[in-house]
Length: 443
Image 1 (spheres, rainbow, N blue to C red):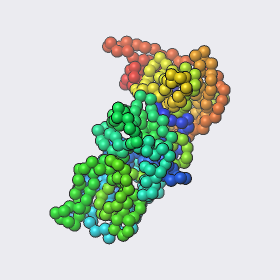
Image 2: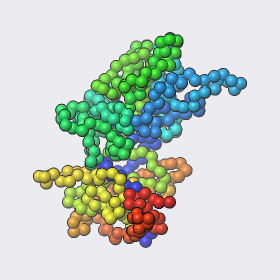
Image 3: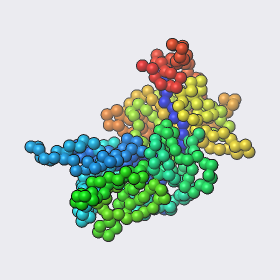
Image 4: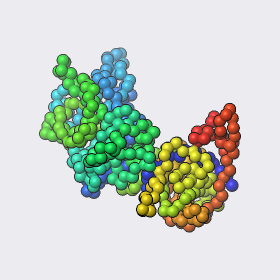
């Protein structure tokens, strides 16, 4: 039997599926009309004028801030106009997808709307026309129109940055975390302040964060250019909807969300979306050697077992691993966050939770088959899901794809792990590699 190590474990709330989507798309599904849903980009849109490069912010809480005042930092040389600012910008005039460094204070210079999402975004699929900006009606529906809307947003803080938190339509909170919605009247509820580790779980469960962004407006001394950034606690995001010939609508996300109007020359943030495929899990791109799994908790299950095979007949096993009822790897505890499964309520009503697991050490561009089974206290299989997936091509970055079906496959035996003591610390030996008790590989 061949074995490969699998060490990265994150528990959170997702539906059992593993589909294909554009790089840079977050997982949550958000209704923006009675018929349409979207997925948000991984962060606010940013532009680097010195290289003519677009990207999404690395983290949802990232914003450029006062450095946006460098929007006119260029000079003339023997090679023509050269940018002296090599950083990023993220405050844009309305509809400036074709001219992101526009800084005139004349609204007439922003006459026609040019979609930012028409550009190739380096960490968003790097191809044209994959993304778009929402309309004012879509923003309004997101905050006010979708089912249970008032329970799916609130102000919050992530990594010390204020902003607006949006939850997906079918939200299930990760175990051990909290969320106080905008319509909550519970004065004892915890505020929505999250560390980066806590937000990792929230994000992978589908949550979106719209950070404060400041705002770039007219330099009242020179009057001619929109180059002054005010460091205020505002989160103002452009829509694609015009207002007359001089204005545009934007969404004020932080505070009490609303849709309002401003001059087109004012620099505001942009958060792009793409149409959702309607699935319960809209995945991000993954590394070529990784696969992402999720499964529902099973009533009365005390153990879960994940098997991965190299053939459709399930005879060539690549590895397997077991979890307890809380999603912790049995005996190893390769887990860095709270388990994702809730205990039954006092009245014995079953409370469904969902688990998420990331494994690595696979071969790129390779077919695999898997089963995930729930077992009761007598080690009898209650239910099993199975499917197949193809790992990403390390050259093209093509995403893993999987399918799921109900099966009644049997379960094998558990692999052996050897503990050693080194310099007073406990380490684990597996397949000739050494890991600490949190699952981090020791080089």
